[in-house]
Length: 316
Image: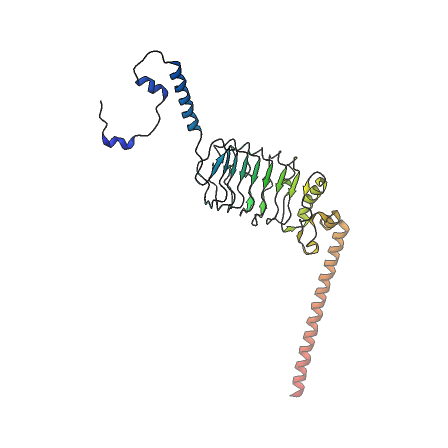
């Protein structure tokens, strides 16, 4: 029997031997009994299954491919989840960041709930391998913008909730590019003053759009979006009563969907050649009048100075 030095034990790994190695080390006992062969196969299947899955994370509950880690005061996401997770809830925690590649191994994920956390942004490519993800809830966080690559490759998304992100100021024009199956989009109660038409016109399946509770500035730049929304209002349910203009002053407090083409008439005013000639003529007249006025004021000042000087000489 070989004696293993104690110093080498610290470098040993606790690994299960491969089935081929195990049989190679045993003396050949003859053909295996069918019962023993069946037991060996079942044990091998059990080892394979245990390698492919991960136990339920601490502070979470796992049942039927649903992992619930909500309301546990977590400051970070659990490091390991069962590989076959379909529904993951991390809601009502204090999570401030999600590490890059966190969802890479969970290709079966359908529902991800991250509402009511402290997220400021998400890493690029987070959903790159989440091709089956259908429902995503990011409401009640601190997101400040939605970049172009935020939902990259997540083409199966049907529902996205970005509501109640008070610092959300910008949505990139290509933020929802490729999400042809998206039906429900909630952008309500954020800090949006403007939304590009390009961000929405690539969503042919959109049924519900929530945009109320934002400080919309209903200037000329909003006209294309409002015109598109009016044309889709029959097919797309929107919270039209909650969407109001916060500026400019002349339309402050007006419902967003109450604005018509007449409201943006001033945005389409164009000047003709006669208008330019008239403006040039008025400018010329004003400049001549200004020169003449300055000339008269100069003469008047000079006369007053001479008169005052003459009066002083007479008194002497």
